Length: 192
Figure 1 (cartoon, helix red, strand yellow):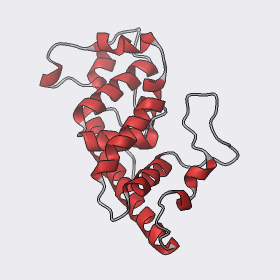
Figure 2 (cartoon, one colour):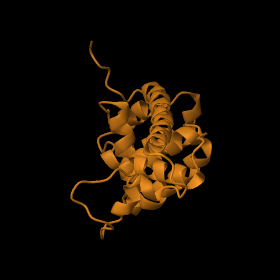
Figure 3 (cartoon, rainbow, N blue to C red):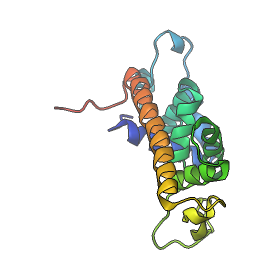
C-alpha cells in the first residue's frame, strides 16, 4: 500500500479506525520479530506473499504506527482535525484545549477549538443519526462563547489566534507524520 500524500495516509488511517469491524485487527498478524531493527510496512507488503495486504490492514497499521510514534500533542491535533470517530475526536479536542495560551476565557477557548475541529456544514441542521459530530447552529455564534460582552474585534482576534495555534499544531504533526511514513517507505515521491 502506497499513499499519495501524508494527508491521504492520515485521513485514511483515522477513517479506518472508526470502522467497527473486528477484522481490522488482522494487520497485527503482519508483525515480524525484529521489526524494531529495521522492518517497515513496505517490507511487510513485499513479504506478505500472494494474499497481500488489504487497504484496511495498511490503514490500521499506519494508524498504530503514527499513534505510537507521534507525541500526544501532534496525535491529538490530527485526531481532532481529521478523525471521524465521535469519541476519539472529542477526546482529542479536549486534550488540545489546555495546551493553547490565550487571554480568552476558558469557555471561549473551548468553543473556538470545537468549531475549528468541527466546521459548520452547509445544509446540515443539528444532530444527525450517524455517529458524525454535528454541532447545533448556536454553537457557531461567538455571542454564545463568552458572557462579558467584549467587542466583536476582540473576539475575532481571539478566535483567529486560537485557530492559528491549532492549525500550526496540525502542520507540525503532518510534518512529523511525513517523516515517519517516508521512513516506512509508503509515500509516493512527488516528482518536481
